[in-house]
Image 1 (cartoon, rainbow, N blue to C red):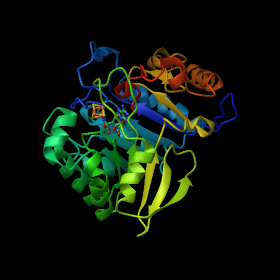
Image 2: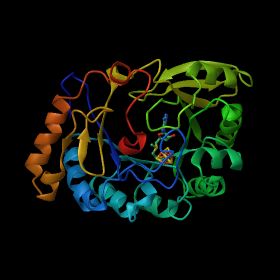
Image 3: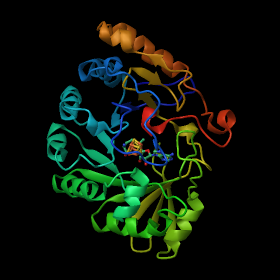
Image 4: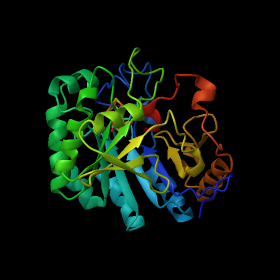
Length: 321
Ligand code: SAM
Ligand code: SF4
């Protein structure tokens, strides 16, 4: 079992397999970054897997693959297959924008993927094209249909933005509800990479839009999840992630690994350590030592407000959201 320096059990690893993306979402990566991590600096799936084995053997029980856009990396199904073969029954999940999903959903499911989160901010093609700066909606919705058809458990992530998609909060819920998917609304987190002038809806504002259609009742948080759950009067369960009000640090159970091999204990890079040399040398003892040191130094609280004021310098596409 992995316990951090503040007594929290850490059993969740998020792996960002690439920082690159085929969308340019206004709230995340509106411009291509000034520089990408050079491809030769990325760890191969075999190298990432060396670390994943250590992490699982030490107590990681849940792995989420994210990015950037993870489906841009070829052979992702093989990576998922390696993890699944190492430990059957692991909670293996993926977060994607869905654009390339229709062609690979079946392969991913066969490889051992259990769950998938798909970002859907709107059901209007022109609004999707405005947010992602590309005509994307048709392919994304096809991806959702295919993921459901092959039997993956699907959740929808929506980031409500003022003047852009705030009028669709209930419509996207209805779309998810009709297909048996849970929706989670995520408050827009201000960050220096996002398009300037964007404004998100607060959790309270999101709920008041839902209340225009439904009466709702609070359920609460499940385990270490950052989402606060609610249920509508007709029994549909949904979640709201409101980092402006709650920091979730007390129950944080996660660490993050980037495509370059930085092991990040919290949402900031400061305390990150690299597992790169250890996995390249096949040095399991060293990789284990680094994992334990990162956990010992995992901060008690994130420094979003304290360090950056209103705007975070964190790039969602680097750490994987
Ligand atoms: N490309 C994939 C996707 O969009 O689902 C995975 C990576 S993306 C960084 C993961 C999640 O972070 C997405 O659900 C996205 O909506 C969310 N996200 C990105 N930028 C955000 C921001 N500024 N505030 C809140 N959520 C954000
Ligand atoms: Fe790409 Fe996801 Fe960021 Fe949008 S939110 S730019 S899809 S990484």
